[in-house]
Structure formats: structure tokens, C-alpha cells
Amino acid sequence: MINHLTQSALYAMTASITIVSLAFLMFFIAEPAISHGQNDTATFYIRQQITDETSFLVDPTDVTMAGGINGVTGGNATGTTQFVVTTNNTAGYRVDIAYEDLDTDGEAMLGDASGDNAIRDYDGDVVGEPSYNWTASTAAQFAYSVSASNTPDADQSFKSNGTNACNTGSTDAGGLHCWKAPDTGAFTIIDRSSSAVTGATSTIFFKIVVPSAATPVPQAETYTATATLSLYAN
Image 1 (cartoon, helix red, strand yellow):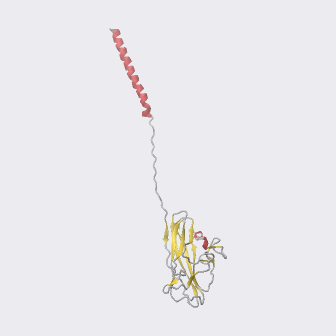
Image 2 (tube, rainbow, N blue to C red; image 1 turned 30 degrees about the vertical axis):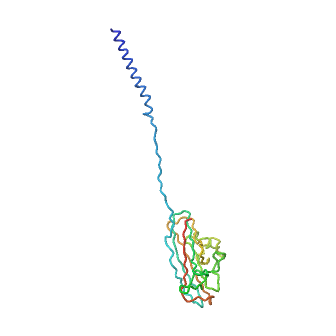
Image 3 (cartoon, rainbow, N blue to C red; image 1 turned 90 degrees about the horizontal axis):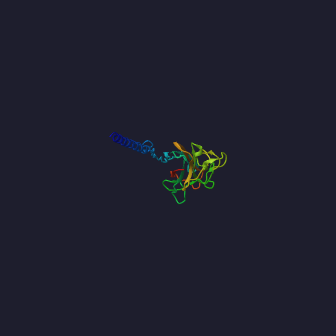
């Protein structure tokens, strides 16, 4: 009887040890998945596009030339207009100018009433580039020049060597020396290579010279030329 109880107790103890051992074994098998789980990450982007903004902050205004000119004895008159460009483009911008051709002779400045082209386009150009100082003619002539508040902005055509030639050197002629004939084709007058977030100012100068006893003789009326500026981001 005692042996039978002892044997039963032994079997019970063995079973208990086996169950506990299996429980520990199951814990150690499952434990790595519980205590050493993989870290997770998620990457995402935030994007914002900044667009180029290049525009006229101040448009050029109409020009009324200062100084009356006598039709027979002649004389000269000048005028200016300014424009301001703003841009966030680090490569800068360029400005082209083109004049309307209002008659078959290709002159830019015509009489408002008669359509007469007695004021001719300046003929002192050097192969389509501005000439240094004013080249006289027997005809009445109309020309323009360009200057920039930031000297490098003016196109090379309107810079001089400071003595006798344009389209060379680095001196801004300031509307005093480099004169260009108006043209129906686009001609670059400003070429800036950097941004101008607060605005960059440029000035266009105009000049009309009528020699004494000009040929042809200008009629007594108002003459008008029309020009268009085009702005491009570099």
C-alpha cells in the first residue's frame, strides 16, 4: 500500500515536472518574438514649389521730348523714360526693345497727321550697333540710348571704352554717347545676370536732331514713334 502510494506520488511529481518543463520551453521559444521585436520606420517628403517671378515693377511711361525744334533752322530735343524690373531668378533677366514700322520706308517716327517720315531713323549705327557720340546727317534723325542704375545690367552694346567706341569696354555711357537707330527687330538693351528682388531701374534716352535746312524739310506737326519692351527671365 505504501509502495503503491509512493509510486503514485512519484508519477504525479514526474508529470508536474514535465508540465512545468514544457511551459518553460514554450516560454523560451516564444520569448524572442516578444522581447526582441523589429523596429519600424516610415519616410515621407514635404515639397513646395517656388515659381519664377520676373515682371515690370514700374512700366515705362510715354515720352514728350523736351525742346521745340524749328523746321527750317533746326535744333534738337531729348527725352527719357524709366522702367523697373523685379525678379527672384538668380540668373537674372533681359529686356528687348522693338519699334513699330509704320510706313513703307521703315522709319519709326512719323507725322501724326500726314504720316510723313521726315524724321529718319538714325543712320550712324556701326553694323547695327550703337555709335559713339552723334553722327551728323543732312536729314532729321531719331535715336535712343540706354543706361542702368546697376552698370553691369546695360547690354554690352551700350557700354563704351570711355573714349571713342561703343559695344566695347565696361563704361556705362549714361545716355550721352552710345546712340542706336530704332529697329523693328528685337534688340537687347538690358541683360542682368542676378536677381533683383527689390527692383532694378533702367533708363532709355531719346534724341532728335534736325539740322538747319534739313532734307527733307520736316512738316510742322507732331511726330510719334511706338516702342515695345519685352521681358525674359534668363
